[in-house]
Length: 199
Ligand code: SF4
Image (cartoon, helix red, strand yellow):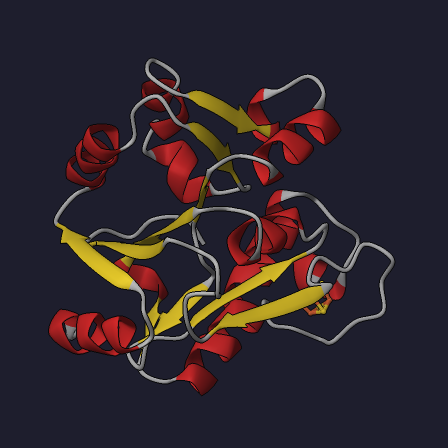
């Protein structure tokens, strides 16, 4: 993993980058910079494993459908928050961030309406090129997520790879490649953690 190369390529795209050895250090950093904010979170095993929601709610108003009895309202609230937190299915050393989504609330939150977006990404998601990042998102992250949700898709029950299925439960309805910070967004930042996190 060439962090300096990733940082430099992200900065060229208007995306800042911070690097931490552990999830705990990354969580402390986010707690320092996010205070008194409205924050939305997209579905993320990475964020869940860091216990970030429980820490952030002490000083912020946080909407996360994984922690709400009314998931639809929480998704809407997250979309309207100032800050949006997400992981990614892959990131290339050339600085593109790849995410796949079924309902697409997570993709939307990272694209529009948020003033600040933070991608929290473990080292297992780093790929050499955009092509390899898209491959990883389709053939590693999506099948593993389909298994986790117990979906009726060929990748969940058969070989761990994408079969480009037409299942109604297809988990990957949209693929987003973020090539730069969107216009009108004040800050987009990638936080890389030197641990294997999420899928
Ligand atoms: S298209 Fe179908 S087989 Fe491929 S990853 Fe998505 S759900 Fe799995």
